Amino acid sequence: MPFMPEMPGPPGNREAAGTPGTSETPGSREMRELMERLDAVVASARRAEERAAEWSARQFVGRADEGRIVARTDALGTLVALEIHPLSRKRLDARRLADEITAAVVMAERAATDARDELMNAPRP
Image (tube, rainbow, N blue to C red; front, side, top):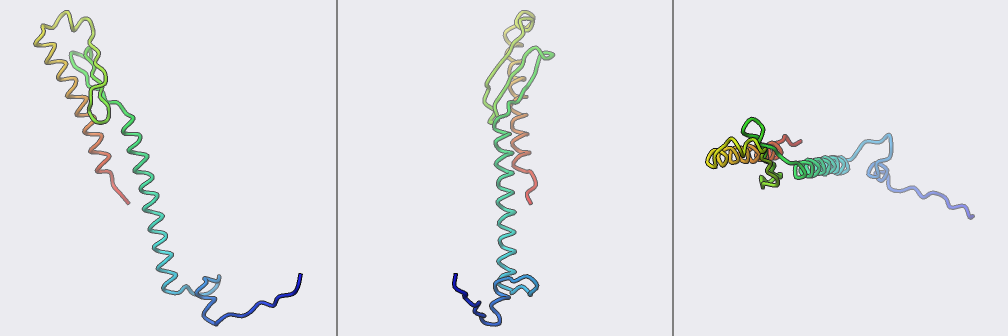
């Protein structure tokens, strides 16, 4: 392999390149700070996506009639399941049964809304 001598560059060239042991130029310092801020924003966005994915996979529960009526909603508050114990069907008339079902559904919806609000109001860096 032929010998190729290293060509010296202009005197300020090493500083601009960020050679160790030299002072940083204002432009390179600003670029480094901007890259650090960008990295922080990207990391924050990833964390927000993870929290949103966890939240959207959750189900929220509301109970009524001493726990014998159970309503489950998804993260948006849409009813996905309703369990009514046979004892509730026997001992409650139609009006009271409807009121208890409504109470359980409202509790589940409220839990979903509270979780969404908590997610949206979480502190951001």
